Image 1 (cartoon, rainbow, N blue to C red):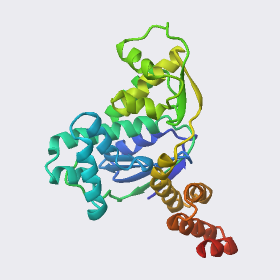
Image 2 (cartoon, rainbow, N blue to C red; image 1 turned 60 degrees about the vertical axis):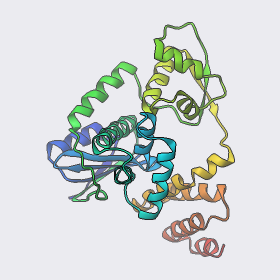
Image 3 (cartoon, rainbow, N blue to C red; image 1 turned 90 degrees about the vertical axis):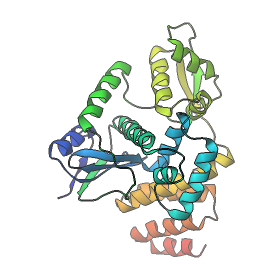
Image 4 (cartoon, rainbow, N blue to C red; image 1 turned 30 degrees about the horizontal axis):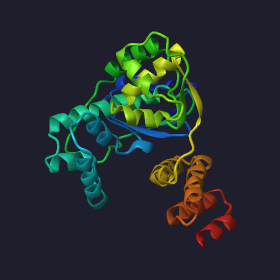
Length: 299
């Protein structure tokens, strides 16, 4: 039996705890209308969690930890385009990482994904039983209780209710506040020009670890958020795949306005995009806007 509802009525930690106690197997889809995530359960344990906007997060995690190189990741992504199998499986099959290191990385991906989702106060969830993720060579199970306890501790410690937008420019405000060594190092990278994403990249550390430091610095008043940084053409094009994945996820949930927004962003970046115009026409058809759907198909 499907379970669905609003995150305003039932928080995500409560939903996860309910599924864990009921030893449920299936997929929990979660959206805050801007992003989309899937959490897969097996007998109440979490076996996979991923944000649609970060399909290859495991590669980034292994890269940041020095387990693979940029060349390794690039080669694995090229193979993935051909074979259409999980990135982690390719890394193991090619002898780039062993199963134990991949297992640690996958666990880290689950933790980071859930910590991000726990900041979503508004949105919707939907649980479908007996739905499994794509079969993988390396299988893990994570106890939700452990993550829920760690998240509660972390959020209480940082007094965090949301994560800063990755495109937001960070501005140094007060260099004299008390900072530990890690905070001081991240603070030195914040120059009033770099966005959150660029500070993370410049640090060379794992994204979520840097985000925790940024949240701490914001809380102390050492830095503040500025305006959103205008994306370069290269970055805009790189995000087309992200918008397409999000749009398809929203379309599958019948969230047509959100799907249209994502596909329209593709067309704004690349007006000649065949997939962007096709999916946009599909949304218009589902909305019974037939003339507009036909016009888009003729493009």
